[in-house]
Structure formats: C-alpha cells, structure tokens
Picture: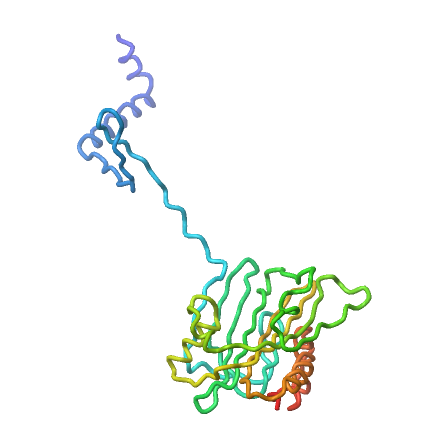
Length: 274
C-alpha cells in the first residue's frame, strides 16, 4: 500500500486537513476575492515606461492649539452676581451678562468665554475670561506675566511679593484703551473678541468706538486666571476706573480663593465706575 493510502487509513486528522484544503481551494477558484482599492499616487517609471506605485499616507489633521470656538445664541440666559467658572467663583459687574462666544482647547485645556451686557440695543460692557481647565494641572508662570507689564497701559498695579511667597504667585491689573473699530476689523478667526463683535454687528447692536479694558491677572501654584472687563470710554478721568479696579480686584481675589459671597459685592464694588 502506498504512503498516502496508509496515512488515509491511520491519520484521521490528516484526512480532515486534506479535505478542508481542497474545499477552500475550490471556493477560492469559484469566488475570487476582490482587490481593495488603495489611494496610490502613480508615477511614471524610468527607462522602460513602466508605472510604479508610491503610497503616500495622509497624516491625521493636527489639532489646533486655539481649540474650538463658537458664538452662542443671542437669547442665551442672562447671569448676575457670582457664577462658577473653571472651578472657581467669578464676580460679575452690576447688570445682566450673557455669554456671547466661548472657546476651549490648548495644552492646558483652557476655556475662554466672552460675556456681553446690552441695554436698549447698546453695548455697555464686555467681559473676557480665560482660565485653564480644572483637570489640567496648570500653574502660574515663574516670571511676571506680560499682562502685568503692558507697555500700552494707562494705569496699573502689581501686588507686592510677600515673604516666603511662591514664585508662581502673581496678581495685578492694568488699564489700556481699545479701538473697537480696529478690533471689529480683525478676522473673526483671530479670537473671541472679533468673533463676538461680528455677532453683535449682525444683531445691529451699537458698539462704542473706543472702550477702556481693565485686565486682572491672578496666578499661583494651583493655576491662573485672566479677566478683562471693557467699559465705554466717555472721556472722563481714568482715576475713577483706577479706583474701581482696586475695589473689584478684591472681589476677584476672593472668587479665585473660593471665599467670595454676595456681601462682597456691594454697589461700590459691582457698579460701573462713575
């Protein structure tokens, strides 16, 4: 008896493998598999007129450092008093404020929100708040933040360094003028302020040609926050805005520490500078 015959009689496993192989070979012959299409870039070969396939994989789109920003509906609910923002308390100046635009992203998972205050279809205030996400683990900078030393500021103050204070702790405010026409002319992709101003233009809200922006900065080992409040520039003395900034900074300080209560926002603190 031949070798194949002896294997057929004595090796049932071998018989099963042989039958399976023959069956699958027959199926492959009757139903050949389709060749998948690959996104190839074809280049003419050299010397013999042959074509050679070169595969160039497309890299995934890079994530934007600025994150995703969007404008919010004009009928967003108004907010007053004290609100929660990025894990801390945020005091709002007097009046009803609405979220006009918001963004999120960046290495620190930062979030930014632009609030507006409108009365009789006239813009009476803007407030831009930027802070890192609660879970980002961000801290302040070792050096003094640029917002504390703005060369274009009209007035400002930097909190003195206390003995034994962490080098990551900084607190300051600065006032600078803002040309709102120039800001509105900036492409909306450049930030929340031009995006929000474009939204106000579509809603036919009257915006002052010039506003005064007071930027407050606070940072320490647990994070940082930048709050910029813009009021219309009525040509009065900057001294009144300076006095208001010093009072409102106290409320922001307590809000950063989580100790702010309604009693810390009397009219002298919350209302606009006269």
